[in-house]
Image (cartoon, rainbow, N blue to C red; front, side, top):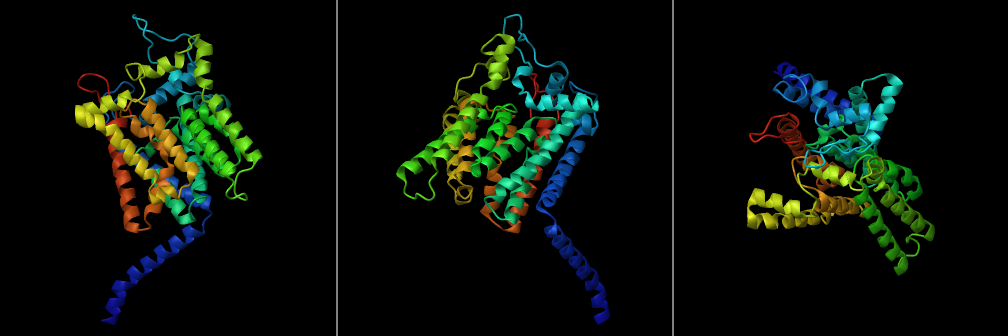
Length: 416
């Protein structure tokens, strides 16, 4: 009997011992290798979802049905970036017979395609390949930068879980396709890290690049301005002289705020200079909305469409209140004033200017500091495992519903 028991439990014990040794070996790896492996596994999962969805892709505007992985990820805005790499930006805004501006490249910021163009020139790669390489390298760099940022607010294990949540987020698949988001998240994480470290002068070139990657300069400048006011009030009150910011620090922060504010206007100014139309950028952006920009109004219109005239009027206020409560929850408070200010300013920017649509899910990715708040909420393995499982399932929904192209009955499509 004892021999039989040993035969049954021996392999189990050996497997358990192997698992323990593997976990122990993983913990001895350098932090950057742990983050890199975690991120690579997350992207492999996303790649499998992409490939499975591609098997069911029917006729579409870009390629024959059932495309391979590389063709499947090079659609939607990736095609716009490919055109920019090849042809640049138009000097004349395209218009229809009625004089209305049509969709054009000025809606897409220049840093990402400029890097891809440089890589193509150096290596001879086609634009789609260069864009993909830049995006994938930026995604890995973003994961490393996000960990470094999280490590300032949490111990190693919790910061690693924060990166896991960020890497598995329902729209995280965008980090491996030829979109500008991976590059923007990398620059945003570095900029936030430098601000937390009070390296305001070092942050200036990063912020300039950030403002040329995607339209996040306005909320970042607002965050810096509010942070400057907060630091100035702390100094004027002078309740804790040893911890209040000095004149040099305040001057550097004011300078960074000014640099960011000016940089946020660089791309609209470039569109104006190239086309001769001062509204070239805003006209182009509003083409995708189908109407002129009226602050806040699209949220109420969408709310009415989804919930009716009464609940639709209340829905934006309920959403804003719930988000505000989230920012004052204990786990998020532990993120510190800078990260909370960023999340508040960015969400305020979306509420003010964004026309809510299916692309809104993708635009929530810059709120990635909340991933650390989710990791700080509980150390329970069941909780963290459940969050990861839900994120992967929702990632399947996002790719199958939004990335895979399907025409709507009345024409058009749901963009990712």
